[in-house]
Length: 282
Image (cartoon, rainbow, N blue to C red; front, side, top):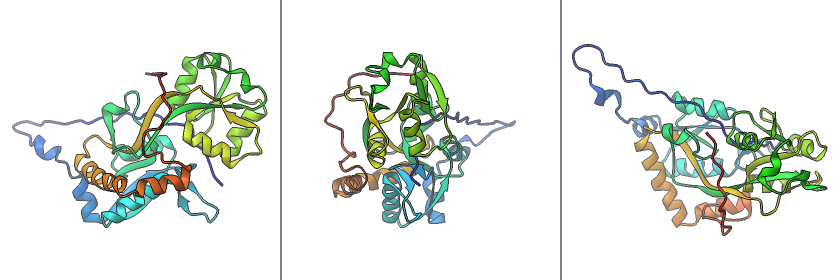
């Protein structure tokens, strides 16, 4: 069953460099072996959800697929590596990368808040912006972000989308790896009023379940952004290798081809829409 996970949360990454008496070889302690580790193992370990349609989900044949999944598979193929996927919720993915259990996270990751101080992204694989899903019948009484006050906003706890909703006075209704139909049906029947999330993910989710009477609120867009693969800030060598391949995939049209498969448009380039409104959360 296709599932939708709403947004991302932040897990702190702490690096402690200990010194003990005499001299300490800090250079050795902080040596970047991110690519060497992967190259020697001939394997790239990737944290993902398997629940985020259409970036990482299970198809009707029970196969893990999606935009982020296919892009990282192609990267690994060109680097002559196998891929091992580990599935977690969003907090689990970030923790897995943080602890070095996974080399990177592939799940429509962006950088926001403090995350950019502790992690880094690959070259962009998707450009987008944020939007809101509401009821078809009455737009859930929402025509702007200010109208979120008093509304019930659905999403995964601790995400930036929920933080934005809270900032505008919404009541938060939290889920954990809920399915598309649960999220959308709850908006349709009034259990909740609105879902804040990425525009393209919402577009594909609404399109996949046309019988549920919800829609994306037109012309209320904010926070132009881009996403990529999430890595520890210290994984410079690994990110360089991955970025080299991503750039070649962009040049030879592979990125556009994969994007069209999942989004029916090329999300690997900046959208035509001009998104001027920006909402920050701490």
